[in-house]
Length: 127
Image (tube, rainbow, N blue to C red; front, top):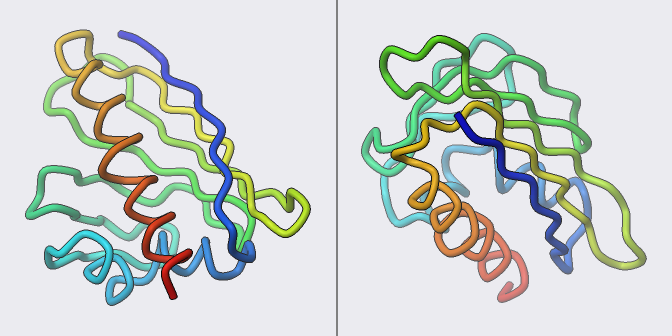
């Protein structure tokens, strides 16, 4: 099991970033796929036609998102934590993803950078 940490700035407010990460309609706009997501603890979510699914564990509006991501049978849950902090005019996302299965690590890291965070950034900075 591996861990991935990453910091990433987006030229948008914390509120805009939080909404883009937790609102099904906005997620569908930046992924191009149907999404099931909200900002309620206990919600089971699904993105990219189920390629990413999990459960919301802790949600603090405009500041913190903690989720368990499902990878089938694993000994320890894979936890994603995103902290949103003001960074000048930008919002910095401080991402930590723990207990990533070794065989999925490279794909997950690439996914975070290219498909997840870059897509959110392009979506928010374009409009």
